[in-house]
Length: 451
Picture (cartoon, rainbow, N blue to C red):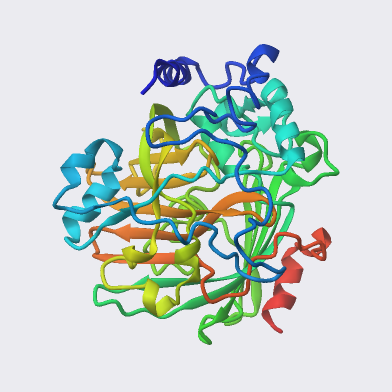
């Protein structure tokens, strides 16, 4: 690793939280020059090529029309090499601890590694906002909130791990988005029942009409999820308002409608380490989307920045049928594309005065997206309990870099949870202009649930 990465990492570990997240103009002007517009190293390194702009439009080698799933522009890429339990020691430095544990647990688990394609890209207005954020964005509340910044990435030249996780949480995912996804808790034998969810999100943070975070009434996200299958779960609806500063107004607000009671109730349990909705107890509320919600139960620290193998450009996986994708023990690894990317690696250690089922969490965030790509979750004994993987994909029709399917492997239970799968669902609509912010109320979710 070049000294520039080590210097950046050392700075991030030494600066105290809230010590002034904004950077001088000279540093901000690196964005778009030696750094990409969101703060990654533009230069290549070994098998990692230079970033040359990513995929900002539909590539010329695919045929796509609005409403389709995205064709794979890299379908002809051959496998460069495969990492297995037999040769894992040879690739030790570029494997995460979670990948190593999965290979020890499942002898047939493998990683097919392809050419690294630095395809991540975002709209020009996101880049412009991100550069301004570098100059004005500030951490507040001991790392629990953001002020000054708006749109894009709040801390493209991050000073600490709190800022890195805020980059993940507030990353650009358009303004109004709707989708349908499937979740599947998979047994040791490979059996599963699909849960189908229709969800939608409004990201006030990405509202082009807003100029500063202070205009958002402390809400960064309105999220609505309606379970539509199987029949016994249909009609359960969840509404979440996520806070931009968890120390104000009680932080996250959530409500749940149950068709059994025909009532809408406050749902403070949709946070932290309570079992995630539709997770069959295999994940926590704050692990959805890699990590979500308040950061206040942990102390966060940067470990380093190093090349790691991550699931990226996951077009092939998203095109697979569920029966081919979901297998006993783990996902069908022949369908998953891994690439070598530089990742920021940092950890969260549980504060002595707080509680959570995970005493330690280690994250690997791709520098080109600031998104959680992989994570290891440790129990109170210090034992590795669960392993997360986010299958990154460039939505070149928007453009934005976001996760496709997610998976949580429970090493102790011998089961796993695959979620956010869109394989056999309608294509995600990142331009859902019809969504009306006024309908995101507790009363509206009752009406939705009783249809």
